[in-house]
Amino acid sequence: MLLALLCIGIFLVQLDVTVVNVALPSIRTGLDTSLTGQQWVVAGYMITLAALLLVFGALGDRIGHRRVVLAGLAVFGLASLACGAAPNIELLVTARAVQGIGAALLLPGTLAVITDLYADSGARARAVGIWAGAGALALPSGPLLGGALVSGLGWRAVFLINLPIIAVGLPVAWRLVPRVQIAHKRARTRLRIGADFIGANVVAGLMNFVGLGTVLVMTLYLQEHLAHNAFRAGLELIPLFLPLAVLGPVSGRITARYGPRLPMTIGLLLGATGSLCLLGVRDGYAAVVPVELGLGLGMGFLTAAVVNAAVASLPPDRAGLASGVNNTCRQAVGALGVAVYGAVVSHNVVSGLHTLAWLGGGLWLLALAITWLTV
Image 1 (cartoon, rainbow, N blue to C red):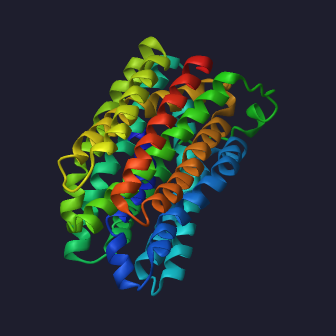
Image 2 (cartoon, one colour; image 1 turned 135 degrees about the vertical axis):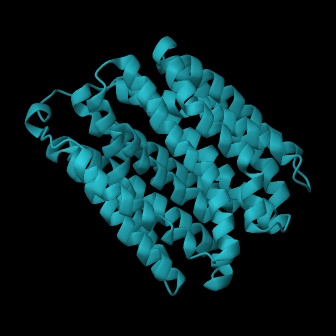
């Protein structure tokens, strides 16, 4: 039950990435904003999240991860309420930044608690796979749920939907997360950072740069270029997000048995193939499916493996720090990917996608080389 509860944290953090993407056109119309405003609704959340992950990860090592997880749930819930009530784009972006603070408390806190619970490396790898799968489950849920909410209730509902989840999760967290103070045991362990830790985090960042950037441009392509409504676009993104949810636990089991390099290699090769398939996109949905499948399968194999590789590279008593660094790399570079990918397609969507095919494919292959040199 505790593992299931910890998965709620990653589910909320990831849900508020993709559930917002399908609402962007409605936000643009409802708040009379521009493409820049749309990008900041996504990037404001991710930048704040990335900026604070390392701080809150280390803080959890000192004051206890229970406090960090509880605070994260509370802040995230209040910020979600503010997002749903925002009267203009400036206040919405501000509330999204506060949401990022709550997410920055939750993400390293939940992963660090998992590290505390599972001392055996194989069991920990399997648990991380389940955790990553829960986060990935939010990705296909986001477009479907977001599309249904936007179509039926309007864009504000995509933020307010977090409130019942928080209402259930917060009291359960209060009861189940252990009351353990870990600062005295952990604060003085000497930290040695090797190439395996650095390499795993660089690969994690490159994964999110391409992955989150592609999610944004696929959403814009489906809704603004093909003129599909939000719910239909959500359905059309399932081939990308569903493999992520299914393959997280599978990747965890492979990592537990063979180590992280094998699933990382498989994932990076599939991701490179998916990015290069952007060269075939012209006008129509059929050409988008290979892109979504390649990236979905690739990130499904890669995510749990690269997270476990990073966390396992540091001593267990630095779990919060390791989680904070890994998630900082993923979110910061992912936010940069959103900005870069959005800028490339801002003038011409189709030609921009063809440019991004080479960029994404090259970055996946660069990550593959780093994996074999360091992990």
